[in-house]
Image (cartoon, rainbow, N blue to C red; front, side, top):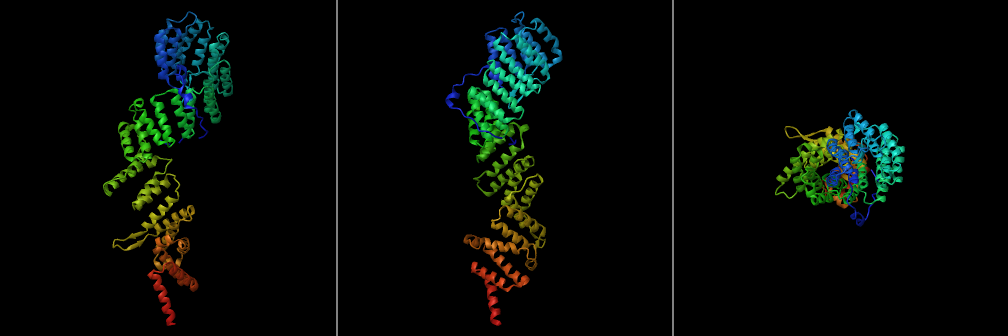
Length: 575
């Protein structure tokens, strides 16, 4: 899933203020996307206080939730309570047909307008609002709930007529202005839309709701800075206005600022008292993405009752435990997820499962560890082709290199390149070293056969690694050895390809006692090579003697260098 989502500072509020948040009303719940709770409140009110308005409100809740058939049931119940000149619930029934099949609703709407003599601002407003399709903020988007119903021209016409008739109806003026803002937004007139929203504030609408809507519009226009500014204005106007926290959380998620997203989601859940599965899962997901893995696990554990048995819980905890280096718990959770929701498995599940198997320790013997590692690598290899963000081939190569499976290590890094991943210094070093090792082949008789192509590939990779880390002595050493062992000994000396790297290697470790002790054999090879090079190629006796002197000084116990010095002395005495 990758991880894709990017950035402003989060605003925090004191716990004492948030703790005093009142229970949200139905309208606020709908604006937060919490339609089930809104419907419950409206339904209960209609049952306890049956009236024209409560029946309409109940139907309206279902309508906003995207359930026009259920909405129609409540509107039809309310028709008997409609006033003669105010066929409000009859208008509701007509609207349910409008959102499903606009052409079939014309006659019904005309009849409603005729009954009200075209003078009732509430009915005109409700029809005009329906033609906006009910803009619905959800996870950052703001789109019509019913795209088929959208007709911005008709919406503006009805809403303007409602405005004219609402001169004495103060309560509805703000709602009309908000709906007009939606209509102009749909008409691609964002500036006019914002003006209408601001008018809604002047008409007494809750500033928080208006600022949230303005933020939504700016978000859709990709002006994220102004979107954030208005969401924060909504919170400043009312620290308990939950929808603004939710929108900020989703916006920060979109731009991959996961810590801010998690922070605002925490505040949303606290202010809203939202215990829906979707909200709590989202909260845990955001904390996982923010690398707060323990918080993600704790949120799931503390909300088990509310979260129920949603399989996604096991995925989040599996991923989190894998990152927390608790591999056994990761494996248990991810295997449970795969068992419960096999059709929802994605490559990330295999990635975290593979890492968990590789991280397991405490086995009774090496064979069991090897089996676990083998399973882990199989999962990583299954995930690698689909993961475009993390170079799993590098992880696979690291394992194969560590276990001396050099053919597989090279193949994994070749796959990484084919999938567009750029090798880092460690990848290049491993690629070079694996090819270097594979350069020593044996024929059927067991005799050494030099694979010059492998040695050349090793030198090329190590040369790139050296550019990235020029002070790493092993890289220089194995460049020298790759160029040396690619040829028969005398040919390797005469072509001189290894010479600059042997010289550089000696200079890198000569003054470091620990390195001199570690690389005694390699230093001896380097000195012998350079002594031979100056004997056979340059014929420079002074240079040859200087390399011998330095070699004897740094490696006084080396027998080969001692023999060379002894032979030289004998030759001198004979002369």
